[in-house]
Length: 505
Image (cartoon, rainbow, N blue to C red; front, side, top):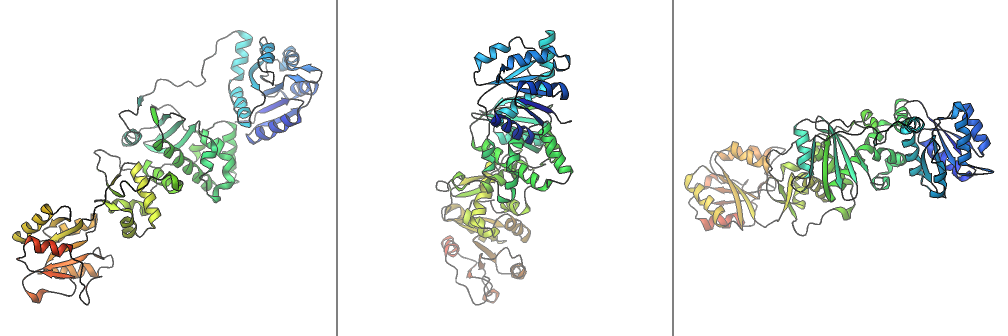
């Protein structure tokens, strides 16, 4: 896109400085004129793409300048945005000026200035021709057609909708309307490529930016809104010329997506619509995210403020949530954080998660919250139940063990494996407090397991069952007779371990 030229005709030095600064930063070439005479002369010489015209000028008015420009063939169709503090009184004078395409009431913000200019640049030729020739114009530029999918969040959740798009490999834009703002989630073959918003102040995203990204703060007002045109073209040019580090900008875009998605998942959602024909903002063509919903929700949980995290008072534990047909895309999620799923097969506290994964407790809390937003885990109560695994082949002992689990559910819970393969599969999913094992040929296998550098029985209480005292080994924490009854077995499960010299630690 070629650079557009904006002529500012205004006797206020403050206004000229503001326009020069903001419009130049937005990628426009700005020419300034303090008087009507200078402005008309520049317009004839340079034929700007747009004129911002003050209504009250020394010795004349903006209306008279418009008339002068209309009378000159080479300037007659230059679009004009009239600006005044008088508002309605001033604007009434421009009714018959075919070259006036918009009004910019003073005082105005820099955001209003840039937005007005951008809209005028994109629509001016059509509006001027319409006003000169009496032709009709559409109500919306690039108006969207009917959406392929629309609905409310009364029945479906946002995670379900995004999962459906991902599972189906769809491409387009999912617009999510809340009670305060609108978020656009752009997907390509189901994978999230960009997240932008309307009604979200750039300062909200900037508040979460780390020091390493501080220099990119001015860019947020462009990226959050998903702007197109000269502003974005300027950023892409900086990347191409290696002036701007694309890695830092990609981090910013990912952080922005994480913050905006978190706002959606914690906000009051109202409706959604999915459009397959809505193009990806041009900046994201250069730097697509290619991320999963889960990875962005976890990132949002990791960077949010402490007071934004839910408290653990009501339900301090987490457990895996089984949902039929749930999406399993993990793109962009670190292998470190994916390990959370390996320890939540059964209810577990944050402290236990941190201990088993070797994470700081705060990291465990935040990552679990991200998985919770993605509905892969759910909160639950933590009981003091002792979890026991049993490797038992003897049918009588198996029945006794099962009876203990069934009749003492508030004290003991457990699972029974009949062979080493079954036990290893159980250990891969979760870790018990105690392991009951028959003292026979199993002891050799047990010894190999506890000597493994990745010993899954570290910290597990080992209880041996047998009748031959020669089978007893110091690798066991305690032992019990094979013909034990339910009460004896229960006490063995609940007893504090008494470590023999050389026992497994």
